[in-house]
Image 1 (cartoon, rainbow, N blue to C red):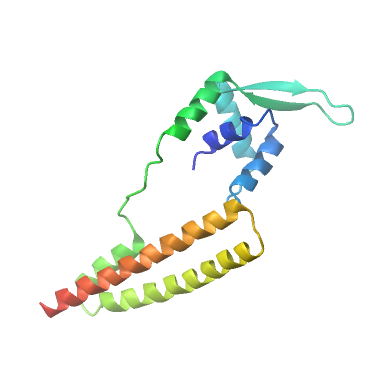
Image 2: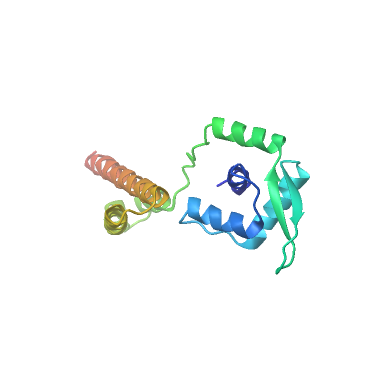
Length: 176
């Protein structure tokens, strides 16, 4: 996840200070939290890259605060990022895959038993997440929360479909 671009996007709405950016980020991505160190470190990098510019704002009853504004260069960077497709993660390294491949090779291990264990866990998680998603929709949760729960649901469904496919292949392999 690009914290850099998220902060640029949040600043596109107007200047803000670090605490406000942290809160706004957590509103936009409700399942993700940032610590203040991440926010301020990212702001420092953005400033060095001339994507944001700081300004000290005097306050009467509190210490002065530093707010950051998006520069033209920062706005251009944000627009380029929005126009560029996100790189999908086709990384085949997966612990379940590793377990299955080892279970095929190890004497006394059964990949179908590994599949059964993984399937039960995935169905349990799918049941939980589907319930959370349905509850969020019933309660009128914000769009970000509903969409993240929907993404998680679809990923779990795809994983279960892959497990089914693995079972087909292992079963066919055992018969030959």
